[in-house]
Image (tube, rainbow, N blue to C red; front, side, top):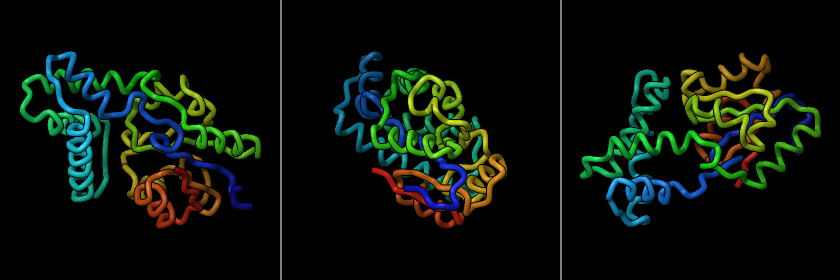
Amino acid sequence: MFPAAAQAIVFDVVGTLVEPAPAVAEAYRAAALRHGIDHDVADIDRRFRAAWRRQEALDAAAVPPFATSGGRERERWRAIVADVFDAAPQRDTIFDDLWVHFGRPDAWRPIPAGRDLVRAARDAGLTVALASNFDERLFEIAPLIEPLSWADHVFASSELGWRKPAVEFFRTVERRLGRSPTELVLVGDDPELDIAAGRRAGWHVLPIG
């Protein structure tokens, strides 16, 4: 299942090991309803995807590209929520609610295929790490959700200073783990941020989903 040279299996988190429960658009609608705003779920989903792409484009155009921080990640999500609810004066309060919501363990559920791969890596005696574009809220929820709690190391982009697909993201994880690229496997669901970026960094990659 894993390359013979592998010493550590590094897992993406969202979409690979866990997924939002309820789904993002449903959580956004529920937060809006608490503040007297009723938007169609399909419209929220469309607006969310467009807003997420806009923020990715901004990060790609930054100097240096995909550099980040705790402050940048919070403002990134604030801008996404503002784009979804662009005409609502309550959008900042909705953002505050959603920031808290997605920082709770009960907002996430395990993905069985990912859980099985984490178990297989542990059974093989390999180091297991999480490396995600999630911000530092990941440090609070990872110990409380299986299979995230099975990881030996947790890396969040806002703490590393880089978002995937930046090669610096991968180099920083390598240094933290004390491993060369050929000893590392990235397991992820995103064709560009995980699979293509991992290959460019010289890692082994294992697509999931």
